[in-house]
Length: 347
Ligand code: KG4
Ligand code: ZN
Image (cartoon, rainbow, N blue to C red; front, side):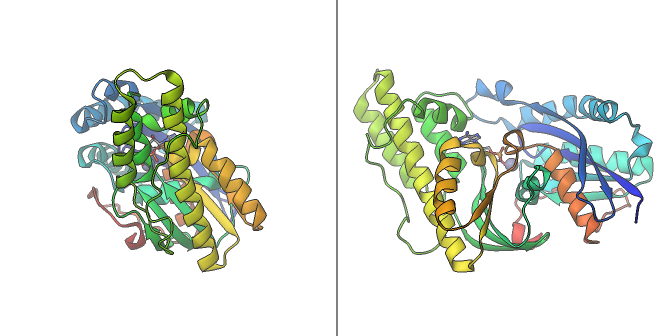
């Protein structure tokens, strides 16, 4: 098999519009040819969170210019594309509809198939875009703004959920705590920056379910504990006190993520861990996971830093890996649906 297949991928599930082109040639690792991304973060910042209607309208404005940019980077035209992939869910329904609608319309106009992709599968497989891709099977720690899950991954499409959060996601714990500290949306990276100058042991914060003996999570209580501390330190705490609280919050989240990842590795007996999703960009999490895994002979794989948060490349890559395995069931009838809620183990 030497023929090359070009896949154009669209991501629009939340507040990033992403478009990317990936090439598949036989069994060789798929190659990212070009990608373009527009983040709406600055637009939503004034509201302290994502405003779904504004998100949808901005996806409409960005998606075609980004597509032109990707094709021009690749030196290709639309008619060179043989498959169009798009995020079908989970995410904001209106935002998903924009990417899905454009993808399916383009596919119909070009006479090529359209392939729906699960957003979390995109995150999970994003380390395959790195220079050091993982081998199957592995344990995956998926830590995004809306999801916190540990999974056993035996191959593309074989996802067994070992444990997940019963309330807030790790990203939400970062974002909500950051908001309480007066930091802008999305708070995770801001809190992490502030934490660099703080003492992680200054405040005693809970590590919910740390000793449950199962790879499950709960972060809602942590946010309440941070709120209690914020009230205690008063309206105008000094910068050091804020940094100490940020560092203590980050440490509480990281402690739980590390301990539960080790538990999942022990339960499965696997020696490979893949970390994906926005929180996977957190330097403290990487440092402590790396140290804990090195001691146990476990290899840890991460996506490139810029591909931890939402992007089109991970959607095109997930499509490419499915195509290579003959697991893609694209539609060519111009029909589509989006799924605001969608369990990955059912994908
Ligand atoms: O995967 P993602 O881009 O979107 C979802 O699919 O949800 O993840 C976004 C989440 C946000 O909660 C954001 O605050 C968090 O990832 N995040 C971080 C960092 N970078 C992004 N959290 C902690 N430290 C970071 N460096
Ligand atoms: Zn995401």
